[in-house]
Amino acid sequence: MRPVAAVEFPAEVEETYHRARRLEWITVAYVASAAAFLYVTMGTSQAMRTSFFEDVVSVVPALAFLVGTSVARRAPGPDYPYGTHRATSIAYLTASLALCAMGVFLLAEAAVKVLSDEKTTIGGFSLFGHVVWGGWPMLAAILYSAVPSVLLGRAKLRLAPKMHNKVLHADAEMMKADWMAEGATAVGVVGAGFGLWWLDPLAAALVSADILKDGASNLKAAVLDLVDRRPEKTDQSGPELLPDRVRDLLRGLDWVADAEVRMREEGHVFMGEAFVVPRPGAGDLVRELGRAAEAAKALDWRMHELTIMPVERLPDAEPR
Amino acid sequence: MGWSDIGAAAALALGLAFAGCDGYPRDANGTLGQVRAGQRSLRVGWSPAEPWVRAEGGAGDGGPAGVEPDLVRAWAASVGARVEWVPGGEAQLVRALQRNAVDVAIAGFSDDAPWGGKTGRTQPYLKAEAVVGAAPGAAVPRDWSGVEIRHDRRRPDLAAAIRGIGAVPVPADPGGMAPLAAAYAAELAALGLAPAGKALTTERRVIATAPAENALTLALDRFLLPRGEEIGRRLAAEARR
Image (cartoon, rainbow over all chains, first blue to last red; front, side, top):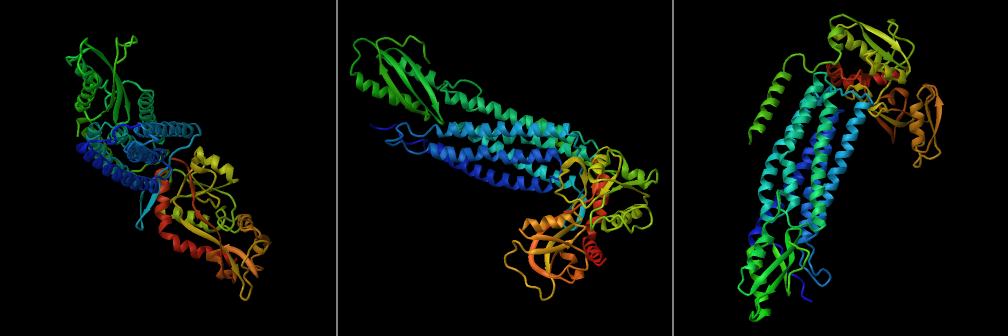
């Protein structure tokens, strides 16, 4: 049996993929350095600790992209006749679960810190033989952890829709919004320096809630993907219009009386079935079906595989 | 960059500029300012912990003797603060610190003490390495399990470290440390021992402070951190007692 088409991306999207891949490797290296900077300066600040864990967990979507997408690009073979496109969705599910777990863990930690009556103290920090207030290196680490993050996020956000990659989109959104979490951390540290020790766990709780919120919204999107919801736009802003365009294309053919399309997302690409009711006296049906499938695929690179089935009447349960 | 980003950056910059003013960082309860101005004395809780804090032989001010009490005395003198000594058990002192009933506590605390974030603490002022030392001519075993190692009988923590390598701790007086004994590396020469090439533990010593007293902790750090070598020499002198 012939497996479905082997190529994941057309040439121009392939180029986007390589750029995204490079950005994600830069992200991994950068996040590792930012996490190390936060770790050596964090002292006993809960907000700094939370920010550190936020950095650590933020490599998970990047790694999920790198692993998931490279697996998804494998050519279909006898054992995997549909290819391995869903690897992207599995990576997405994993990344969002990691975010949820980390959010809950850090929120609980901040609460415990308040309940157990622990107050943050920030004293000295030994820097090249000088003793400075420990808050200054913390703020430097926060700044380093915020600014490049926003720039990387913006760059990745531009690439995500071009390759219809939701992991990349979620990752970019989180990095772009990272300055808010880092800002809260900075407020916690500066507040602690004024003796307002309660600002520190409060900032920590805010950052954890933000991580949890990211995790929950992405978890929802990942699960809906895996239960074969109709295709959704990369940024989750609404239904993808491609199924309608394919249906309209089929309905517009002169040998077709009526048509319906059923489509699902498999990672970057869409697969589905079309049901067409041929007009009486349609010519060479086999040849027309083949042509229609090619025309549908030509609409968009993401239209990966379309099986067209001639029927007497459309299925009753009004599919889309 | 959107307006919200610019606003956030401006707010942060303003906060930093404000924070750069005098009197930052601050104490939640104003301890440093009060003891400096002589409004009240610095309440220092202490609990015996050889060789850092000793109950006998203080400076005649009702306080203990040893490395840490002398450090606190020297710091208090440098900022013009009076010291009020408060004896207590370690757990009692931690509870007192939490509620600002004492300002500083010394009990041979290290940075891995189980009290965690319940109190504030200085940066480690000394890295104290406990090692095994051998008397001249003593045979140094290759396998330490079951070997008898002596230790100052007033230091149960060294006995624990000796058990940690599978050896047998033998309590002894400072004069009778031959042939093998555990002590801090800085003390070995004073005890007439040479390093036997076996490390036991590395402790990073700290002084505990009342939580959220940032200025007080920073002032102690500024005093302690440049004095690491001096404190190491002082530790060696303690061993000669």
